[in-house]
Length: 284
Image 1: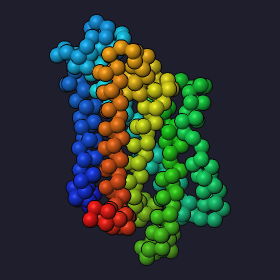
Image 2: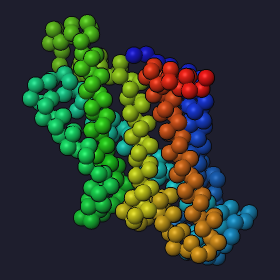
Image 3: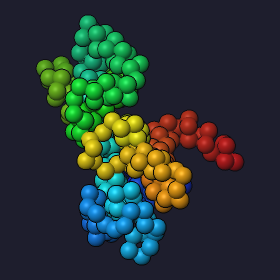
């Protein structure tokens, strides 16, 4: 399955818009030290200062620059999202690929485990884990990855069952190739487009869940997060400060999730010809 991802995205208006939004958020995180002269944890000015040339979005209840928090919050969201996307896809490839290649009892047991994990609400598990463990970014990435990989594993297994019937894979198995060789040399290269779509979906879910957990207070207290910004701003909803504290954080989160959603949808149309025909029919 060989697909020119960039060409597919360029031909789709939603894809172009999604990439533009992602680039905007990435630029916010990468260029954060250049776009602000303050540090997120440092005192920057009087409490609840309104937006000005010195503080573009004003200051919060402890005098920290809100614009700085917004920029560094992008780093947190991208770090968690990309970390979860990478780790979960590795788990999905190993679990789904080996289940399809090995088959038998191993396949049945692993797929029943996948079915059981899919119905577990990730947020509840993370909240319970945070009650006994100190929440931090690495722990959050590991927990979310451990709970999000089953969906990708089912997709990988279904595709691998079809790909393993190819002549090249059958020949390699005949000559005694190991499952790792078959998976890395024959299966994964052909699964490229599917894996990209799964990664984008996992990143989108992870970004949204990280913000939601931070909003609920399940996060590292020293970590800057858009969800935590919204939680703190809600305490002062009776003041005008929410206009430049709450809304920018919520808008940034919406832009990030929308960017990954649009990009994933554009790639999904390239993988699903029936979906592409339905979209063209709806637009005509």
